[in-house]
Amino acid sequence: MSTYSAYDVAVPVFTRGLKTFDHVLNKAEAYAKEKGIDADAEFVQARLIEDQLPLVFQVQVASKTVRNYVIHLTGEEVPVFDDNEKTFADLHARIKATQELLKKVTPEVANKRAESESASFNPGGSNPVSIKVKDAVIFQGIPNFIFHLSTGYSILRAKGVPVGKSDFIANFLDIPGFE
Image (tube, rainbow, N blue to C red; front, side, top):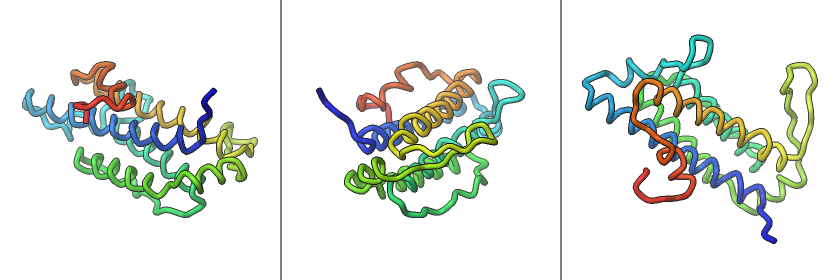
């Protein structure tokens, strides 16, 4: 039976998920160019439904989630993102900066911290919980990241961008041609 460490699970999922986000943003830009529309004006503030937050927020929270887990897995502080993105170029830069943060995570440090350190969360707003970093990254970080990635993908799909399941899954499977 094979076992996976926190590093083995978290870093590839976050890395490949960010690559997926970048890919669907590229598809949205290509679609906008083909249709003669302004991608920045049409998509950056687009929402699935009125009371849900826009595409820009989805990219921001996905990257904040990765940032938070880089801190948990390395024990090092990393710069806060400014949340001032307005264009696709800004979103791509945010994703690239987040990918760079992941390079700070080493298996040795991450796996040691995942087993020995705790992370505090306040999921309900009134009852903080403390759990091992390994459990936090697997059961909170990854699902939260995937939620915002999926929501961003769905916003673009709802706006007519021709993305399909393969655009979402291919980078997770490391299939060439979906960069």
